[in-house]
Image 1: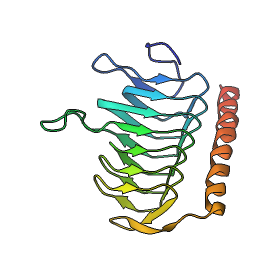
Image 2: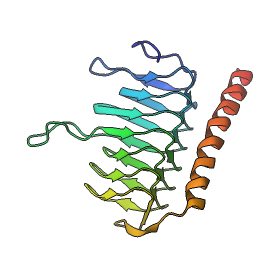
Image 3: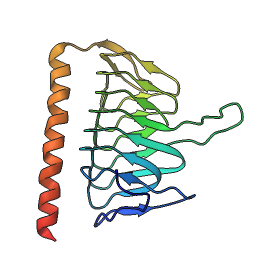
Length: 192
């Protein structure tokens, strides 16, 4: 992990606030055009793609290893409140896929979870391991998706269990994004 000083990432806006600065693993890729604010931790081989906003000004955002946050997504959290001393940090595990234009707010996504294009996950919602929130779905506050479940709709509801082919497809997506991030980092470095 890099030092507490905001890392130098060309084209990325990195902002420390309230004495907290983003901590980005040296092997993580953050694309130009992103804005990262506050108490953020991004693990090894993870990627945050073009024009994402991660704002941890009132709580924390933790992203595990080999996770990808695709283009245009917004990640935020909520502060502690009376009766809720923990608030709603955003905790994202390892090998998670977060699709383009997703809005992820103060929830927990377990290892190998999947959030589809344009989906929304709200405070204190939980996406289980190997579970998939379908494109355009809205997982409302406090809802919990079990492992290997597919949820869809607005509000999201259980649709069915995921089969092995779907799980394999998600794992291939993780490998694709890990390699693609390396390719983009190299292309950006070459472009200078």
